[in-house]
Length: 401
Image 1 (cartoon, rainbow, N blue to C red):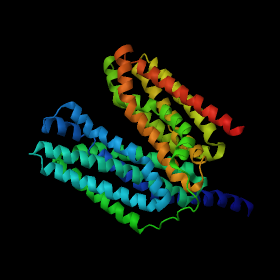
Image 2 (image 1 turned 60 degrees about the horizontal axis):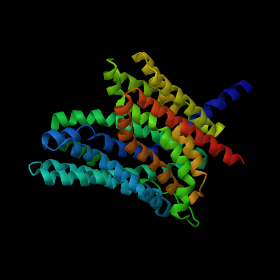
Image 3 (image 1 turned 180 degrees about the vertical axis):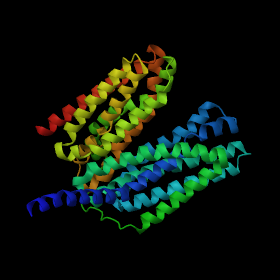
């Protein structure tokens, strides 16, 4: 009898955990749709602007980067909407913006013969997508946290990150295939379809109540979350550097297999995010962040000193393992710094630091390479990660005092 009972309990606990994961996935799904919408045109638009329209590489780059500017500027606004009007409203607006961006892509293709007008509509499409990303992903995260409970904040943020990288990884090659077979209108139509279907799905889901209470001024929320955001931004430099420059680094070293290096990073990142996310609730955000940043620093040392592609691949894998839990572990501690009815704003501000990191690292790292060579960019990443580690250790000590 006792052995039967003891065998039953783990099965029931495991089933409950799976049920909870699927429950959370029903909310972070909307983040996945945001990043599928982002990934679909990502590899298609630069050649479309440069080769088809005949504009220079600066405008081709602007067509991509302006979306991140819109995302960065609208993050705090998305957080305030989630706090004051509800996470469901934020997600609905986000899905509507993603759908609008797809409709505008159809207009871009239709106006192709009038290049200046087509490009102007493309910029509006990218701005709409950037705002949609802010509203959709911020609202999705807060909706999941509120529905599952604050004790599952790490789980929600962790699955949200998988949705982000997974959506981009799936959509970017799919967008290239669609463009090669049917052209840009196919990407616009698919974006409209998934955005509209997701809007309908969000509409049918039950809202969570807006937390009552006096909302803190935005400046106070930003001040409380900013140190955590700085740790996140500096901790994420490794990924920005690797994704942007590893191909050129391999070419400079006369190596092959740069794509495998990125794959190794992704495998390490996803494996830890899936199997170790529970360590945050068990040991706390700061201890997990400290261990993660140390592992990430080891990975950057291996890349900096890499004498072979295998050593570089090992460094990328260790870097992915380290970075995996940085966002959720520091994020859990960031949202604790504000009352529950300010969590949306806190998440918006916190995530905005990651956007700033992605936006600024490219030109800074490019300048470093120009002066000191390709390997030096991983030393730059190492210094950034160690600085993030110092910030996290300081925050942990301040909290314990």
